[in-house]
Amino acid sequence: MFEFLSLTFMQRALLGGELIAVVAGIVGPILLFRKMSFTSVGISHGAFAGIALGILIGVSPMWAAIAFAMGIGLLIGFVSKTGKISEDATIGTFFAFFMALGIFLIDISKGYHVDVMGYLFGNLLAISSSDVYFAAIVLLITVFWYLFRGRATVYSTFDEDFSRIVGIPVDVDYYFFMLVVSLVTIIAVMFVGVVLASSIMIAPSAASKMLSKKFSNVVLFSILFGMVAVFGGIAFSFYTNIPSGPSVVFFITAIFAISLGIKWSRNFVKS
Amino acid sequence: MNDGFLTIDSVTVRYDHYVAISKISTKLALGKFHVIMGPNGGGKTTLIKAIAGLVAYEGRIEMDGLDMKKYLKKHPIGYLAQRGAQFQSFPLTVYQVVEMGRYRFKESRMVRKEHVMRYLQEVKMTSLAKRPISELSGGQQQRVLIARALATESKLMIMDEPLTGMDPRSQSKFYEMIERIKEEHSLTIIMSSHDIGFTTAYAENVFCINKRLVPHSEAAKLLKEPEIRKLYGPNIHLVEHHHLSSGEEEDV
Image 1 (cartoon, rainbow over the protein chains, first blue to last red):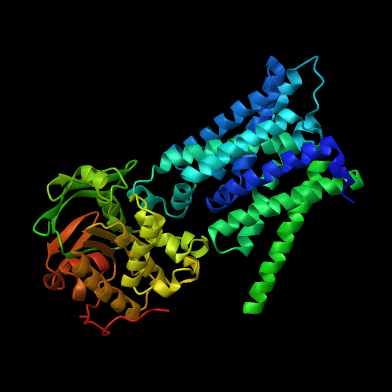
Image 2: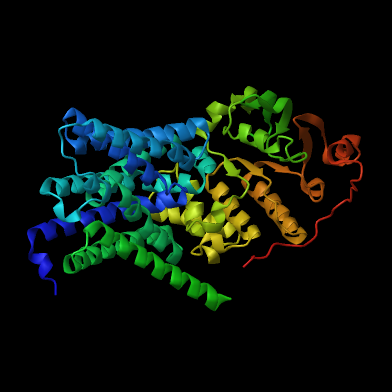
């Protein structure tokens, strides 16, 4: 039944996918409670412009995408903080521009054969060992950040004014958080593509939020749901021969729907 | 400390070109219960935030002779903001919310737990420590926020319209609790309210602002001020309140 696990490329896909599930499960709930779910959409589309620029000027698309994603993460944060408008409004303004910029740059990259669909929708089964190593480094950074600044960031998400008063460096923590989100988004883009990255970032957390009343449990379930969806999605993709990215997204959405059903049932029983 | 003053000297706050409060000056005796009154949009929250160091201001605020900005760097203050929507959905337990007040203290988890439970005991909420704050009533949430403010071990507690949405009985119990903790912790309390009702029965000093300072006098005198009618309209009826209930009970 699990013969796909004996194949090296499937092992890599599974390992990489599970790493994304863990890091997305850690940052996703904070994005959700800050009402910044759209952030990963903005960053992932910005990363597409970075990929295109990398192709055009002949540097590694991955490194160009990382630089763009981190720059855009900070830009979204800076414009939102200083312009006193919501992150979603900022992202709504920028993301279409970055997508357009990416398409424009790819269009002028004459002489290159560019697999735009690959970047837009990803291919978990094609990830390399270096991609997995990079995901492991992002996991280390994310865990390190969560251990040292996670509690303070949760506090400032809950009550920003009180957090400032007790001495939490709210703005510094916010920009650190945006950098971590940028890194997590970029590995999601590498594995499942620009279009599907936000699903793996947000849907497990949204499903978890409906079932948990403690923040630590929201994070735990978010990680768990993401890992189950990655495993199920990759296995399903192997046996049905459908693309792996969409397959994972189908599983994540199914988990979200089940959580919604459980929540509705609970509310129905209560009433 | 209780012989000193919190001095507000010609404080003006602007949001871009909009002047929220203008040249407000007053002296608030430490160790007393002060209430800022005024109509909605009159600048109560802005003044509260200026004192708490949460908005930039022109002028000077001093705590017992020390510039407030310097004071805030060394001392946390107990701050209760107006309850926002996050209290209705954020999955933090009562214990975790009070634990926020201990952020500055370098202490072991055990010591922190002792402190948190002690402050929860003070507001009679220990039995609800593990409950999500979103599941509590408005009055219970305010008790938790008071425990969190106490957990900072501050001598100054600032509250922005904490009575919003409370029924008269809960308001009366709230004031009784405030009176008790003020005495037990030698606190200076500054609270904003647009409710004339109970305020004058419990506060030791009440002053009104409507962009500018209106009158500054003792609570009893305030009732006679015609300015109140100017602020709230000519049809306002002032009714003297007395303490409603005796003793506090756990609000479970």
